[in-house]
Length: 297
Image (cartoon, rainbow, N blue to C red; front, side, top):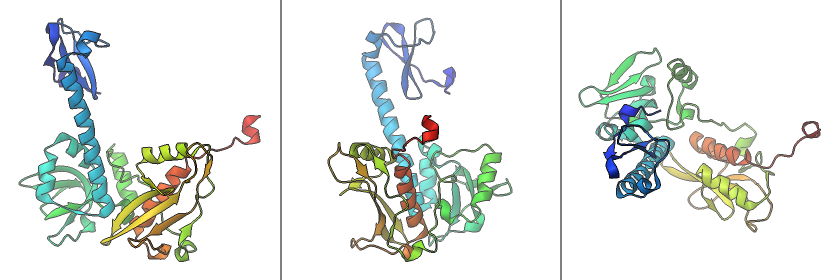
């Protein structure tokens, strides 16, 4: 919650003041009392319109920061230290990066996973500070950092426990992101049927869930592109391609390379497989589920 003292008030008409609280317009009357709602005339004033435009920009900026950091994680991209230092000065960037598990990388972009920790601070002189598994703050002056996908973090369970003990949360879903490994039987396959047969009353409903989850739909397939080991692979999960108002059933989860050729599960990178299954599971979870006779009795 934003404290009254943290709201930056700007002058409005008739000696009222306007501000933003959690992206919403708030106002004070000339006596300094914060009102439950804005008068109509004040809501339509130039000052209010300017603040609403600022709130929209901040929302877009926050979304862009989160998606960029998530892309760094999905691609295991090294972030140069000077770039990290530059964006850290921005409160929204810092909110997106703070408490993420990071690993120092050398000048060749190679990570040192033995020195992973929870990112807490970035300074020009000391580098970046992390809380290690012992709960101690360590400073690194390496060339940059990597935000590894959780499936690549060997001490994931210990770091989750550390974050829980310290009541630390993350803006970008990393520590508690679901991770998925192929079974031995799946490794020889080119498709997975675990999430097939999910029923949606309308294809529109399935498409809406895909949009909310952030997965583009092309040719009847929800898609998730992952770059791993300098290779792009696209996970595709069939959600339907009939009339938007018609009932639809989910189908197979497949992975294709840049040449549109299906890739065997055993040849996929760990991140690629994990993210593809994560997509299919999240969409399948939104399917129509019939009540059992016991529940309806």
